[in-house]
Amino acid sequence: MARIEKVELTRFTTDVPNFDRDYTDDIVAGTMAYRDGAVLKRPLLMVRITDADGVVGEYANWAPSGSWDSAVTSAKMALGRDWGDREGIWRNARRANRPGNPYGLSFIDIALWDLAGKAWNASLSALLGGWRKTVRSYASCNNGDRFGNLSSKEDVAEFFLGLKERGWTGFKMHSWNEGNQREEIANVLNMRKTLGDEVELMLDPACVFDNLHDAIQVGRACSEAKFRWIEDPLRPIGLGAYQHKKLREAIDIPVLQTEHVAGPEAKADFLLAGGTDLLRADVHYDLGITGSLKTIRFGECLGVSTEMHAPSPVHRHLIACQQAETLYEVANVSPAMDDPSPLIYTCGYSDNIAAISADGRLPVPQGPGVGVSYDMDLIAANTVQSEVLTV
Image (tube, rainbow, N blue to C red; front, top):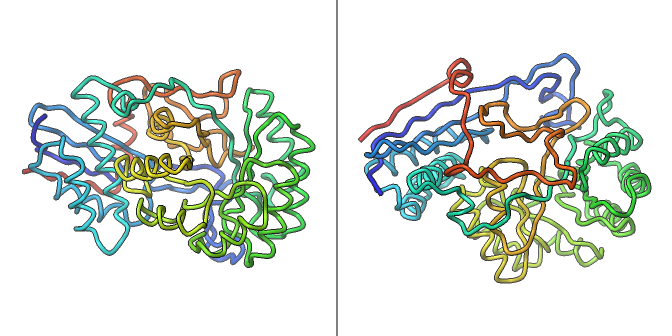
C-alpha cells in the first residue's frame, strides 16, 4: 500500500435525448420525464486517485446535487494518507462534510476501493468475498407520462411483454405522477394478468400518494397480485418510519424503504422502528462502498436483505457478495430509453435492455477493481469543471 499523492475531480455532462425536467408542472415536480425532441444534460462526477506507486483508482457516474463540494472536501481528507486507510478517510471526511449529506465522499470511497483492487489485481467482488459471477436482474421503467411513453396500463404491459421475450424475468413500474389510486390499482392487476404468474413484479410509486389510505389501497392490490414488494409510495420522500409501519401492518407483502434515508445509522433506526421489511442502499447516496457494506451486513445479521438501487457496476459487485440473492435494478428504461446508464464506458459494460442473458441475468465485471474503463476523450469534451489536488 502507498500514500495518496493526487486526486483529480471532474464534473461533466452527457446528453439524454427526449427527456427533460419540468419545474413548472406541480404534478411532475422536476422528475425526469419524457419530452419528445428535448435534450437533458445530466451531471456526472469522475474521481481519479493516484498513489505514490502510480496506481490509479477511478470512478464516474451520475452525480447527486451537492456532490462537487463534498468531493473536494473528502479529497483533501484523503491526500497524503495510505490508500488502505479507507475506513479512517471515510470516518474523517464524513465529519468534515457535516451537516450535509457527503455525496461526493461516495465517489472518493469507490475510487479508493477501485485502487485497492488494481493494486492487488483483484476484482471488487473478490475483495468483498463475492462468489456470484452474474446477477439476476429486473427492468424498472420510467415514471409513466401523458405524452406517449408508458401513458396507459396497456402501454406498460406491452413494453414489459417485449422485455420478457428478450429474457427479462422481473419488472417494476414507477407509477404515474398524479398518484391516482384507481389507475394504479388497475395497472397493478393488469401487469400480473398480462405478464403471467412466473415473473417477479414490483411497484415503486416514487412518492406520489398524499396519504396512507391511498398507499394501503394500492398496497393491497399489490398483495392480491402477489407482487414481490412495494416501495416508496408516500410523499414527500419516504422518510417517516411510523407511516410505513402502518402500511406494513395493513398489507401482506414486503415494504421496501430507505432509498431516501441516507446512511447506515439512519437506515438501521428506520428498520428497528418497524418502517420497512427490506433495506435499500445506493453507493452514490449512502457513502460509497464502505457505507453500503455497513447497511448490508447489519441487515444480514437480522435476516433482512438489502436491495441495491438503480444500475451501477459497483452494485453488481455488492449483490455478488451478499448472503441472500437480491435483484439488480436496471432502472428508468422505457420505449424511449433503452439504456439508463451514462454511455461513458470503453470496456463493453452495458445496462442496455438488450444486454440481458436468456435466463434474465447480467455479468459481474471481472477485471481489477470495479472492472470498467472510461471514455476519457468523451469526458474531456464534456467537462464543466475540474480540479487537481496534490500533496
